[in-house]
Length: 83
Image (cartoon, rainbow, N blue to C red; front, side, top):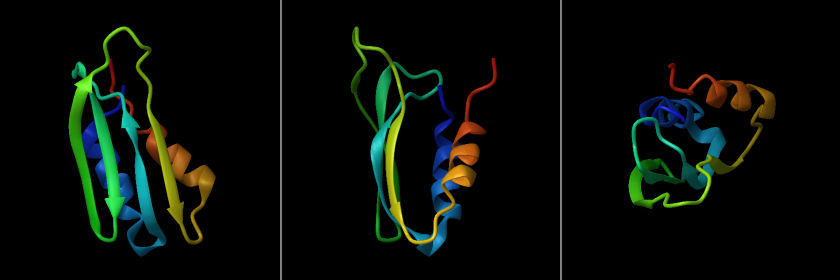
């Protein structure tokens, strides 16, 4: 599970290089699916329907210019909740 505020910070820190982001996020301490979306300069994380019986996972698509895939992956990996 990820910490929502950290994910938002990572996407915000990408600045103008990140053109669009969209996806579902498994949020720590939350039974509902998180939905993250960035369009223009607006980045939002909202809660959607419960996960129900399906496996919880995070799946985000990023579209941008000159994004360092490995660095973004590391930054999102660091958003994991600590036990």
